[in-house]
Length: 326
Image 1 (cartoon, rainbow, N blue to C red):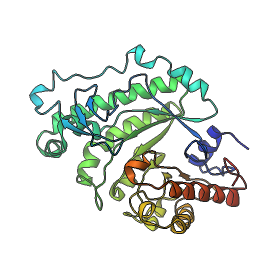
Image 2 (image 1 turned 60 degrees about the vertical axis):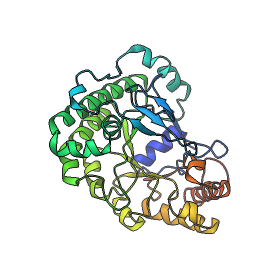
Image 3 (image 1 turned 45 degrees about the horizontal axis):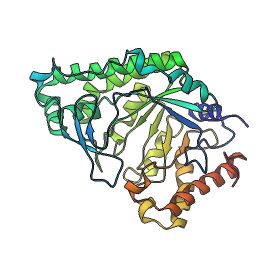
Image 4 (image 1 turned 120 degrees about the horizontal axis):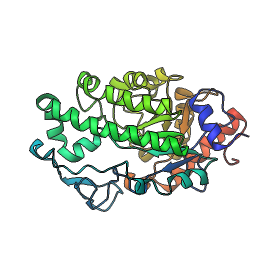
């Protein structure tokens, strides 16, 4: 059998991997390794101040916090805003060694959000107003984040990382948060620049984005996205998402909002089969994963076990192998 790195690459390239690549809890196994800078400027504390001086709070159930104090309330403060320096060598101490110590895994270098970081600095309401009333300032800020990501790509590539990943949740429940046309005008060129830098350095591109992103999936693919990591599918429909089969790789758990919390164990198992056949095939294009904050999402241990075990059975039945035997 090929190793973790090779099985993920074959999946992303639709080159008939010999099993399903997976990202599961330790008892089931993973083909992936997240690689962070020593101090990642996109780190989001549950409580306290981050490196951009945004102040976070957390109600204590989920790992996720939310920003309570925004450091860039006024564009008058833009010139004096603290911008973390990703070129500092001390940020990169130990990164090469970390990658080398996991050379059999598919390594994912963690970048910086170019939408979420904007509203962590400005607030959502201000960000949405900026799209129409302060476009020049907004684009300058996104360009700073884009430049940071390009440098991050180049450093990770130098040390041998396989891919770049970051998170931008673009969707509401049934639509994009902003006008798709404005997304194409403002954000798409910046994604394209980041993803070109990654591809020029022989790295794959992965984006986490939840919510309804149907209106920009074609654009993300056009911008150079190789893999979409989405934790919901039912709000968009597996049949609809299946239209993108063989064009992009889906990296997903069973829908964390609906069937994973509301379904019976048998319904979860059946959904695993539906997901695989809708989004992937023996050629590749589908990677099952778990949601790593099960308590915050209300996920039952037995549901996690049912999902992981069923996908491992699918891997054994369809490909002849799985990461562990089930």
